Image (cartoon, rainbow, N blue to C red; front, side, top):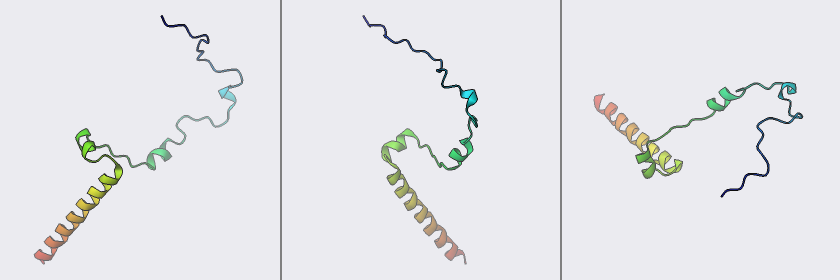
Length: 80
C-alpha cells in the first residue's frame, strides 16, 4: 500500500508572490522574437533513422544542392 504524502500539494501561490504587483507581466511578450529566431524543420520518422543528427541532414542537403546546381548549370550551357 502506498503511503500518503506528508505534505499536501497546494496550487495557490504564497502571499509574497503577488503577481499583480509585478510590473510588465505580459503573457507571450517575447513569443514573436523567439519564433522568428528558430528554423525548425520536422522530418518523418523513417528519415530520422537514416539521418540521426543535424550534421548528416546538412551534409545530405548540401550534396543535393550542389548536384542540383551542377545539373542546372549544365542544362543552361546546352541550351545556349
